[in-house]
Image (cartoon, rainbow, N blue to C red; front, top):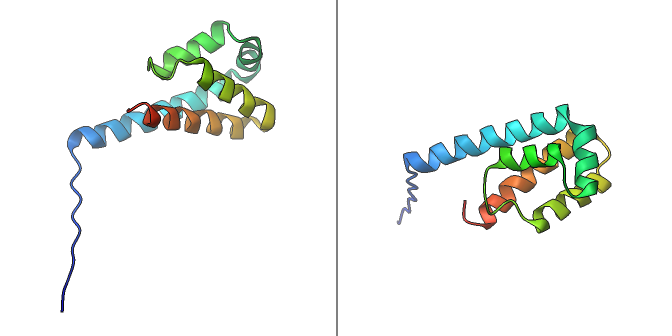
Length: 102
């Protein structure tokens, strides 16, 4: 009889990254919910004060790309319920962050 055990070690840095990621996603959702109208206008226009503030909140150079914000604009068009859009924006952020190596 054989028994297999899998052990997964995660470092404190990994755990800290996850906590930080969840905090940032929560802040993104709150920002989008509170500033939906002016932010949506900035997204459609391709720039503006609220979109710049969202970029600053995301704080990652690899996230601040034309591709990311065009994906955000597509989400804006396809999702009309504001809380769903806020959640989608936060999830898109974490997907993009993971794609560029954290």
